[in-house]
Image (cartoon, rainbow, N blue to C red; front, side):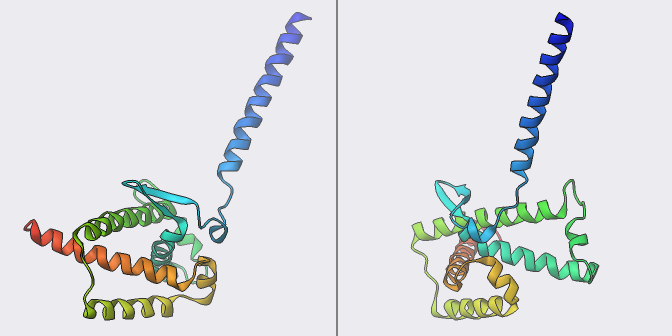
Length: 178
């Protein structure tokens, strides 16, 4: 009788443990609704928090870039390309990491540009305006709606990136690099 009680208690404990682990995994796999999570912090760079709203340009850029290749790979089912497994990870995860890396890179150089007082010239601002127009022209209506951010947010991100790029070139030049 004691053996049955011990066995039942152990079994109940194991089932409870499995339920907790399963719930944790289910909760971790819940899909993030991007437009509803724009204020969530995606990454912190040297004390500066970048929210999903700040990352919207990078996400849209990376998605467009990969989606172009995915259409070539399989016009009927671009999801097939996104699900490919490449260099030790799925393409979807690789794209996510690339997006984060780009944002971190640009934030570091943007902060350095601010410290140095770097500004865009009139020609650079004109080039930026053309890039912004091209970006919005390339986005499909569905993609614009999925972003969930106003055009001004994306345009501001692109301005920060332009400033970061300018400083990156100046920084490389100051250090004798190409």
